[in-house]
Length: 209
Image (tube, rainbow, N blue to C red; front, side, top):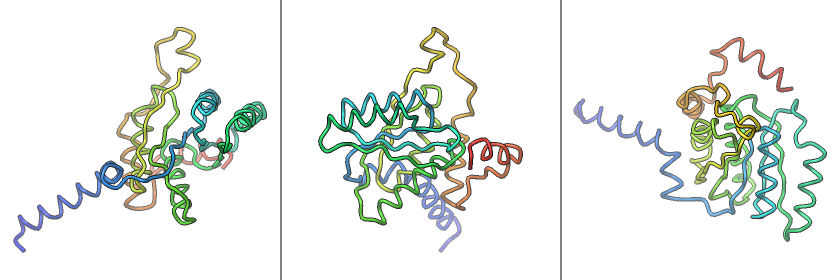
């Protein structure tokens, strides 16, 4: 095979591999019912429970153990919602991940476990988070979940700062940062958090992991 042709094949395969998390849900989508996915945040879980009350969607909460979520009040509220709906929708808690990238990998591991157990993979994952947290959180989640046929849709919630009239979002990382970390994770099994030594040491401890 001539070098230009070989280079073209390698480039095409690489591009297909990079785009697969977006292509798979369009070409061969999963068939399970939609789930609400919450990446930490008390107001985010409150918003998810309120939506669950209307739609009956199950909730997956990926959280740091140190946050103490769901709180007793949130569990009671979700229990009331469940009692009104048949069958009652679950609130599944995964205590794993200390930042957006590692919580996205926790999402992938949850999907992998469902697949291994023969459980339905959600066709859509409604990601509940703050508006300034998108698109990077959605990109990270899509890269993590797309290979299982799930499409990630953003459901932004209003933060307390915005509700009080502030229009300045909290500081956030560039949108491409976690997308690159998730592609690195797909290739190597590591999100590269060790590259930021201080962050890698501080965040898991603060998270209770």
